[in-house]
Structure formats: structure tokens, C-alpha cells
Image (cartoon, rainbow, N blue to C red; front, top):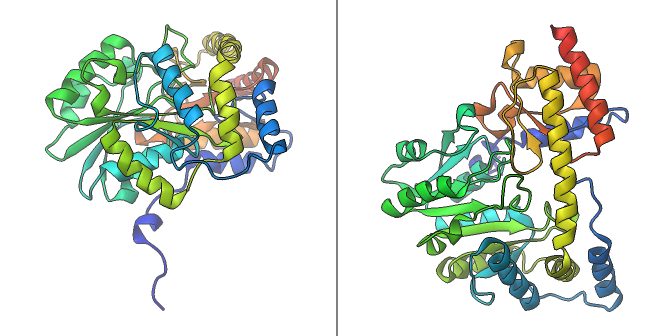
Length: 386
């Protein structure tokens, strides 16, 4: 019988994050620090708008690109917050979460054999999305000594004649690393010199604890070389609404829209109306959540120090990436034993690339009480190892 499966898909590994998520879901007394999801409810005024649109029967398809009102508000927001200007009618597409944006951007830009530089550790979707296009993912291991930032020297060393796209995953999942303006300016010069394009995943842009996030699209001559991925899941606690967006030059947007309209049609209508309310009136909601995350971040770092658990200070997203190399176990072994013996779920660093070996991703998108209990159990586990 003929094999019904795609060999390309068969060779792709399942997500390393979901493995631990599925196990912990069957352990009611376990504490999970593994999921990258805000513990806040979607702000009430945003939920109310979603409910109102359902009550009023606003349940039909929107334009493939999304509600014009939402695209206009997003473009205003990006100018106001990040100083990057895009045209709402031609350079903005509303997607089903940021993940769809990553997929359609790469499919629109890549031909088989084109190379994409992926700094790691990083979000799990980049590499398989490149593989599904027939492109070639080029993993670029980042260094703890550089706070997991991408350096000009590292980027230069990874570029070949086949390189077309560089992914910038900052603020970073899983490390919490950020890139500041001076870092991006050096990277931008290399991008321009080699005539490359950037996919800038800015889903955590609002969750920055060391000054305002800088979008590489706002730097001179970079707007037309950059595809910005963003969304509402993290900043507005809207993960289940599945609403994201892409900002890109018209030339690229036209091709992304073809993929989006054939595969998706449009993003959920009531989610789009709720997103309009979020982007128009949600700045205060962001401030409240960022203050809470920052408090938890500082608590986590202070507790790590007391436990002698080495961890560079993360200034973005809501993750810490401590090293567990001193314990002589792989990341998978450490995470598995911690779950079995102390019922605390974390994610092995190797879920985010081979260079994540020796690290764990710990999410602090949880209440202080949950963090206190989880860290108490982690300390007990480490003490027993010692």
C-alpha cells in the first residue's frame, strides 16, 4: 500500500513544550511553570466587546485582511508605541494568532533551498515552518555570556550566498533576552550590506523591563526589509481569542494574503472586534500586567540567587532560563525527575534547540503564591541532589 504521509512532515519533531504540558494535565496536585500563557483574565472591557458583537449578530466573514478598523488601530498603535509606520489597507494582515503570521510570512518569502538563520534557543515554530516551505533552517546558537543576544560577529559567521531571511526572536522565548537599539543598529547594517530580510517576532514587545522595546523596522532603511509579527495573546492576555497580525511591505503582504485567504479566509470576527477595543483602550491593562510580571521576575531572580541557581537576568517576556549544568544531568532528565519527585513542571531547554541543553525554561506568568510553592519544591529537589 502506498505511504499516505509526507516525509517532510514525518521528519518534523513534535513540540517539546506540549509533552510536559500533557503530562502535568493528568496530575492535579502538580504545579506547572511550563506554559507561556498569562494568568490574567482578558480585561473585562475587551471581553464585553466580544460578547456585545455576538449579541448584535456580528458573526459574518470579514475582509481577508481583517476589519479595516482593527488594521487602522494597529497601525496607529505601532507608530505610537514603536515608531514604525505601515499602511492599514496594504501593509497589515490580521491572522489567527502570531503563529499563523510566521507561517504565511515564511511561505511567501522562501523558495526551496533558501536559507533562514534562526538564533537559538527560540520559539519552537520557526524551524518546522521553514522546513515546511522547503527552505533550509540554519540554527545559530546564542551564548549565555552575551545574555543570549545576537551579536554582529555571530550573524556574519552564519551568512552564506543562500541566506535570505534572518529571524529576530526578541524579546525572546525561552530566555527572556532582549535586543536594545545599539544591538539592533549593528545587526541592521549587516542585513543591509548582505541584502537580506528580517522576520521580527515582536509578540512580547510590550513585556520589556529595561526601557521600551525597539522594533528593527523603525531603524533607517529597515522598514522595507522587515516583516513584523505581533498579536494580542501576551500583551492583552488574549491567548484563546487567537488573534495576531503581520506588518510588512506591500510587495510581501500581497503574497501572504493569498496564502491566508486560501488556508484561513479570515481571523475570527468577534475576536477582531474585541481586539479593536484592546488596542484602542488597553494601554492601562498592559501597564498593570507588566508591573505584576516585573514583580514576579524580581522575586524569581532573588530566589534563584538564594538557591545558588545560576541565571542571567532576563529583561523581556515572562521567562527565566536558569542553568542546571552543575547537577550533572541533561535538561530532560532534570525536568522529568523534578516533575516525578516534586510535581513541578518546567520545560527542558532542549525543547528550544540543541544549544538549550543544560538549561530550563521557567515561566513566571503565574501568581506569586504559585511561584513561592513551586520554588520551595525546586529548592527541596536541589537540596536532595546536593
